[in-house]
Length: 161
Image (cartoon, rainbow, N blue to C red):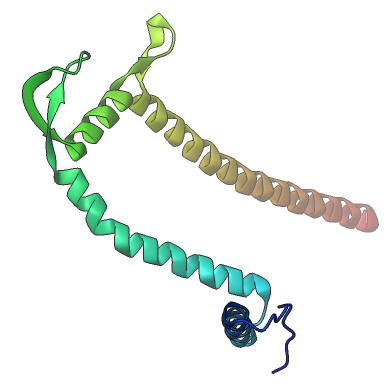
């Protein structure tokens, strides 16, 4: 393995330490790069490892924070006497958002109802489109076959008649 260092050696201990650290880092980078293959693969590998490390370290902290009770205060910061967890607040906020009504006065529906309705409509449209396309192909094939039969029968009659 060959690599060049761009360190100016001045003869003091700090520049030697710097050269050793840079050389070790460069050697390690070359070993990792050779085992991974490409810079993109190396970056992806390091990113994935970093994400997994953060997830592993943060999961117990987040779980504890979600279940830790704390006192609720009013808009002025005064305690109300009620104690809730962050999980309860998140659930209440999500429920409130899903149950909020939207749309024109005569056709209001909750966000959840709207989402379900739109999702069902998309699925039905997709399935109906597929079914109609298949039926159209069958009808077209049947019409072509019947037309070919009628044409063949007409030609036979004209030849014999």
